Length: 287
Image 1 (cartoon, rainbow, N blue to C red):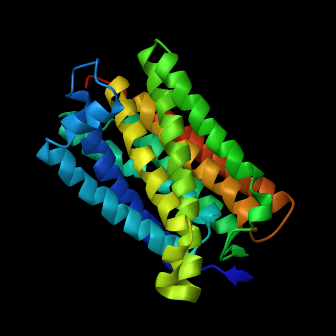
Image 2 (cartoon, rainbow, N blue to C red; image 1 turned 180 degrees about the vertical axis):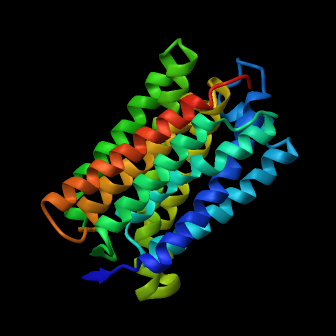
């Protein structure tokens, strides 16, 4: 069944979620970078980080962000909500600058304005999307492809020698996991609306938990391995790309208008994503 989505509720919820995720990411990057031992595997790294009070506190921000994201997905589509989370890098920029005692430069603010303008134009063009409240499992090929991307990029990161490339590959695998977790949360909201706690009898809450935890572990590996400018753009961009692909294939989400309007919406979204990459590179400094 196709359901109407509301931008009026989804957008502010998604923006609040992006702010919480940004605070958590900035702190976790600082804490992971402070873990200098390179011989730790992923499980050992998490074991070290859980002993850091600030890292534990950052997870509270991530949990609040996930709750707000779930609320946004309950009233909005993956195609609209997930790209808004790209705004998290804009929020992370001043937080990271504060943590590392740096100033936000005019170049950074310029790319921030381009990002905000691109996303605002995208939302104006797509309008309120329609889609299914539950996934259509006959079209699960895209999801399987996204799972393959997670495995391949994580394996590539483990084997790659360069720190920037390694951090970027871990970032892609983490972002892809986060996108799959968002799709599972979207399915949970649709089932909860119809069956309440009966949603626990479905695989979706557990799929969301597994992919969410995997995204967290991979992100810590990315933060420890390289600079924020290598890991966060990869993570931030792969999440909405995977979410949009799954939203279109499994949830039959469709945007307002057609033809040239869709092409223009895709163009301004690419511009916004490009600005995010430029913003992160502009933030590449000591620490």
